[in-house]
Amino acid sequence: MTTYLVTGGAGFVGSHLIDRLLDEGHSVLCVDNMVTGSRANIAHHLSNPKFEMMRHDVTFPLYVEVDAVFNLACPASPVSYQKDPVQTIKTSVLGAINILGLAKRLKCPVVQASTSEVYGSPERHPQDETYWGNVNPIGPRACYDEGKRAAETLFFDYRRQHNVDAKVVRIFNTYGPRMAVDDGRVVSNFIVQALKGEDITIYGDGTQTRSFCYVSDLVDGLVKTMEISRDFSGPVNIGNPAELSVHDLAEQIIDLTRSKSRLKTMPLPVDDPIKRKPDISIAREHLKWSPEVELEDGLIATVDYFRSLGM
Ligand code: NAD
Ligand code: UDP
Ligand code: UDP
Image (tube, rainbow, N blue to C red; front, side, top):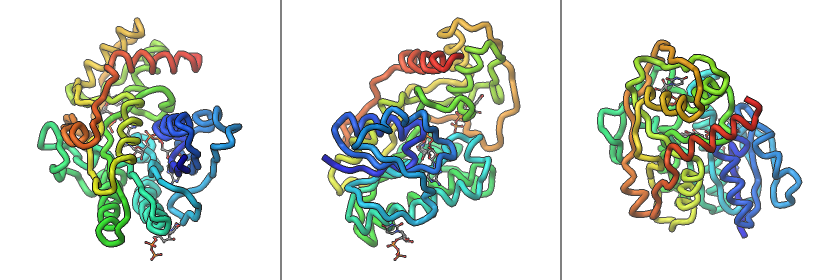
């Protein structure tokens, strides 16, 4: 049995990761400042003696005793990370320093939730881990993209300089139950709009692409990264290579929900990446990982979740 620290554990991905770790009989300390997380995501564990919740902001030092760390703390949707950009970059950079300091003191492994946003608006397609990316360092997405890039730098420097077992996972767009209704990401927005019969908001002409991974597949990739030997550092892409346009996603969600919603075009946000698709060769070879959940099945489960909220 291992005691895991999961920062950002009350968020969408973190809460599913905690479910999995507790299911396997481990203990979990969830650290979250609740800026985008929700008590409802972890409420079902509050009476479990192997689960502990601590309200704390990772930009401040954290002294706790654990065996391994998943560092997920950071708002993830463009709407939420642009609300307080200075806090967003502090969360990635100061958060990484504190969590790496902790892992160094405890001599324990630490996995960083990085992102496909480190590739920016990519000029190489699909994106493999050797690509250095195309990021605007001063635009509205930079607080997130550059924060996550600096965190990767810190993870690799703590590995080289302090011999910390630090690993980096680059997560591509992930969706599923417990996405916040109002967090502004495309899957949750479209499902909520379709269920309410509101217009579906397509930003730009809808030809931009994304590749969507179901949350259980991502959790599996995170756990496999933690379990592999300390020689493996990543960065490793975790995502589903099934690419589709935002327009096609909207049509699929309208079909699945049998909605009468219509498509409405809105301006494309600044620096919105035109295309995105992971090359997952490293994950396949080293982690023996590949996604298992088809988009349609994942969307059905996600629609059921939003329906269960009374929509
Ligand atoms: P989320 O917003 O649901 O969860 C993030 C959690 O971190 C929230 O519970 C939030 O309250 C907490 N948090 C934010 N700032 C904090 C701070 N300073 N101190 C402590 N807690 C803090 O987002 P998510 O989708 O669950 O994303 C989890 C992680 O995965 C993030 O690091 C994100 O960047 C990364 N990621 C997610 C995706 C995706 O598609 N879901 C894609 C790429 C990367
Ligand atoms: N830190 C922490 N928890 C720990 C150990 C360290 O939050 O258990 C913080 C500590 O406050 C420091 C940062 O992590 O600011 C980096 O730690 P490191 O040991 O690398 O740096 P130093 O203490 O030498 O500045
Ligand atoms: N998008 C959209 N309508 C929405 C929300 C998002 O057309 O209501 C688009 C957005 O412009 C982007 C894609 O969907 O091209 C994915 O956006 P999201 O915010 O989910 O994640 P990103 O990959 O941009 O971080």
